[in-house]
Image (tube, rainbow, N blue to C red; front, side):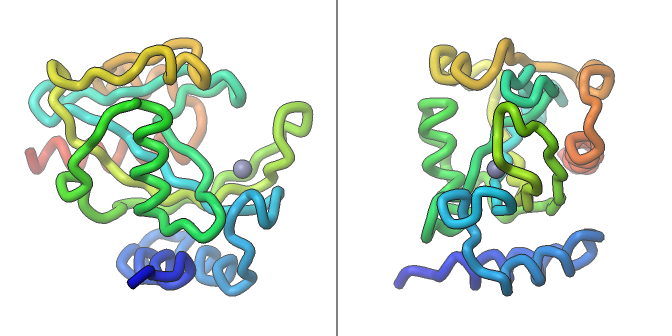
Length: 184
Ligand SMILES: [Zn+2]
């Protein structure tokens, strides 16, 4: 049975209720029209941030549209659950198949204000963050696909990545990696 996107996002938000933006997520879900096709200004997105637990490095890129150093991510499409968006976006951006079981549940929620009218109508993104463990040696994303969104991508250790990242939500993701690396 298909899970409605609203129900799945509410369930994820309930699990991550310690995130400061959880209430904002619940309120936005109540408004409906969650996808960019339905509301071009505020909508939901997924991030899928790859990391290698052995080398304790993260896979990050210099994003063309925003000019920022960001992890991979994309908009949720109409009627998609975040998990379905994750699977589709991984195919579109990396061109690889990833075992979704190994990714597990999202671990972070952020709200990103956007002011980039020349390039996008989006004004606010509700971001659901998945962290994707991969082996650096075995991870072979399609560089042509990556090149459509990023000037460059690569593996960075925590300090190097922190030196490139300027937006606060991506820095929050770095704190999540630090927790994951302590566990691994
Ligand atoms: Zn958007």
